[in-house]
Image 1 (cartoon, rainbow, N blue to C red):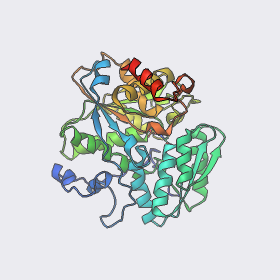
Image 2: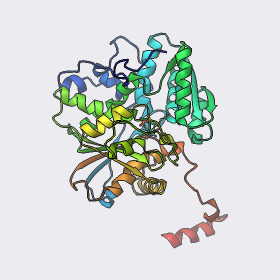
Image 3: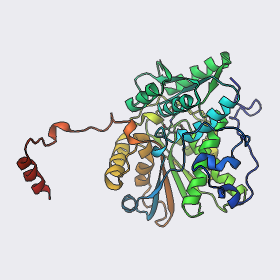
Image 4: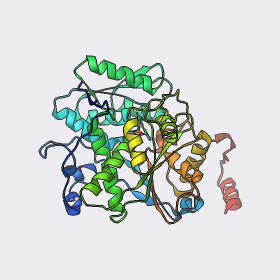
Length: 386
Ligand code: F0G
């Protein structure tokens, strides 16, 4: 495996590319929708064939009813659950797998709380290479495990948390050179994920939102989206930057803690949250996340599992958008921030993963569901509710 850490400053490496010099240069040629539409902003040679499942290009939905409840007018959901494997990970995976396969990789590996694993497995299948994932035993939602199996990846369970899984996976990859790591320490992942910022800017009518609110786990996505907005500004395509609002679960909030105390390092914690995707105590991209939060004059806050579950149900039952628990933390955070964000601000919540992936945490009360056998019974039942 190649090293992704700078030997001088020990920060994770970042790719830099001269950008398109104009808006039409970035958005002009509409070929394939989604991530590869922004090929000019991706650090890959033009002739490289993409390993793609048509990822990105997800809807930005105005959620006025939920907005009213949190004291806002212009609240949007970027529904990343509509990506091919059901999460935002596909944006980064299409780029990192394309790069790996171009370099001759045959064996892809990642540690994961579930979504990275599902996504990598899908793209490995698409590329015809072998995928091997490590997951924290007993801590991954069953929908994600089902995906990993269906896509034909090899799965290894690790005793401990995601942090332990990542650590031993990186150690193995440092000793076995055939392994290509697809975690977000791989800078090509960040390149793919930054396209979310380009899409949001376009979908808002070439306007930068005032706030971008998103869940933070291993902290790759907040780094990526911040990079995307910064590039738009550096290239002269936009003229402002959003405030980044990073949300963690109360039981796994090392970045919130470091941000609040103004510290330049995070203290690893033993994570515990129902939002299993972000059950992470020692995030790999913490440095970049702190930079994004500080440079954007952003906000970092944590929400409880109860607040997360309530927000998840509210988004589904009020707006018809069913997300997994980790993807509901932005809405839970906005409830806490009610009155602190200007009423007419444009706010985008990144809803990172599809609700169908994690059904364990929805308690379906089948026993109290009416059961009928005849048309008369159904008519009488419906008449009562009509
Ligand atoms: N939301 C979902 C649904 C996720 O799966 C993850 C991360 C995040 C948010 C946080 O993103 O790590 O870039 O800060 N899931 C990883 C995984 C860790 O293995 O699937 P992040």
